[in-house]
Image (cartoon, rainbow, N blue to C red):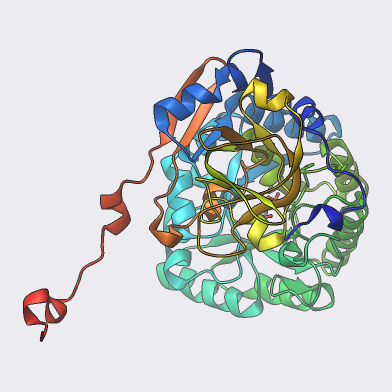
Length: 450
Ligand code: LLP
């Protein structure tokens, strides 16, 4: 678990966390607001835990990214990584900003289509697409499938040929760069399951060009997620991709397109990740002069800072050595701290608590696992039962990674814009939680031997 002692800089203060997040404000009487909506009002209306997203933040981040790409004179199109936040309202909002979808499953394809994203704006990534999923992608005639292996190319070719169709594909290459991010979310080294290694790419690309039913359009790359240590790994990856494009073209192979992946990091604590301008610069210097049609697959950078997880303190417990603030949100809602030791800011919603003196506290959930811990040794005010807190930067890989562990229903999602808000996913009911299960008749109570 991420202990304060694991960092060599002090945690940001509550005031610093607030000041760095423009969608949040502390109203002197209404307390912490997302845009113009007090979180107390949402907690009263919808209950807790609940995910709260800012539409204005989503929109302005989408525009900042597309603006940086067009300022760098790149012919680039963004496909939102649906896995980061598959809520239909979020997808629909981004579709209106011209974003397509980067999907990794049939479920994500259905979500993208249900949100109104046209099939021609959908790219299918992922290392283990099933035959059923590939058939569906062909039937929907999506924009592109990113192939991850020779075996997958053969499989898709066979399916497309049987269906009498041709599918547009790109080959995902593994540029062997270290994204210098958490080991669980780095993907671009030759020890990862993703993509094919650069030295193998030319022969495989040539083979793909010869396979029936496939129309190769170029290359794809994604080196990892939450990339915060400069732009160097991106620059190296795109340089390598640029060289590969040139090498493939020299062999007479068509390479009109490169999908540049996602991965831009956000500041959860005090990280200073490169922003869209630096990313656009790295793409420009590696790939800018090749007349390519470019694609990006951003997830976290768009939606991470746009969401909070709103939770109520169930009880505050003073242990021998530690103070525990026990929330009604848990690892089943937001698993990132348990899974990646990730640090999320936590703000009290009450203005009085926000300005009160702080002392060390562990903030935990009620699930029966020690790893159900959002943070340890965090400087927080007294937070007795009933107080509300917002766990920050929870808009990406938050709700999308939730489970019902401990038979806890999935939390609702709320979209705020200015002073208005809508529930965009209802809290899962207990009937829905148990739906689909049954006890076989040979276990029915009247058949049980006493
Ligand atoms: N494209 C591909 C092929 C990907 O695998 C991913 C993320 C993305 C795009 C979007 O990456 P982003 O821009 O969001 O960094 N659950 C982890 C993150 C896993 C990322 C998986 N792939 C977390 O909570 O940090």
